[in-house]
Image (cartoon, rainbow, N blue to C red):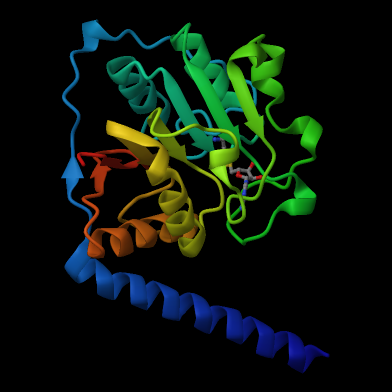
Length: 240
Ligand SMILES: C[S@@+](CC[C@H](N)C(=O)[O-])C[C@H]1O[C@@H](n2cnc3c(N)ncnc32)[C@H](O)[C@@H]1O
């Protein structure tokens, strides 16, 4: 019994070590360039956040960077008509987007616990809890909630063609899921549209390894994904 436990711990440690070594190796060739969006501060006042169940630094997790303000500046700059989010969780980001832009429609996907798979999933949620923040704040009429696992979802059932201006990939952070999610959203992104990847940082510490590695693999395949300076955001712009 104890021997089995030790063997399992050693196996997990070896797997993590192998994964980190692989990621560090491809980082030598495919490290994401860092980009700084130089937005005019006055053009886009960012409101204080709705805080209920917020999942973005500095309001949750580390306090040394501000993913909330970076995201809202991007939102205010692009003023997207249609947003697609993978990973609704309790619906805080959706609520904050709707709070900044009064006409924006948001499609958002989250697997209820019984449909969810993967390792770096952050939450295991019952259907009632998915999106409760945007519902509590009265934004339900602008949101299409999709209760599916991103691995198996068919977005064409909900979205008709290239109508999405901004995508947030923030569901399961395992490398293969992030690659899957990116490939699934591309057919719906308008020319000039932007895809954001959360929990993407060159440190690749802990849960940050999966998405950063996915972005490097996608970069290797020719997608010009960059990292936004001083944030946990990666991004890609659809120039084709
Ligand atoms: C980091 S949280 C998302 C945070 C959210 N964007 C917010 O505003 O608070 C990740 C979410 O993705 C969901 N998720 C994980 N794996 C998934 C999958 N394969 N398909 C769909 N949803 C998934 C989890 O249930 C969790 O709620």
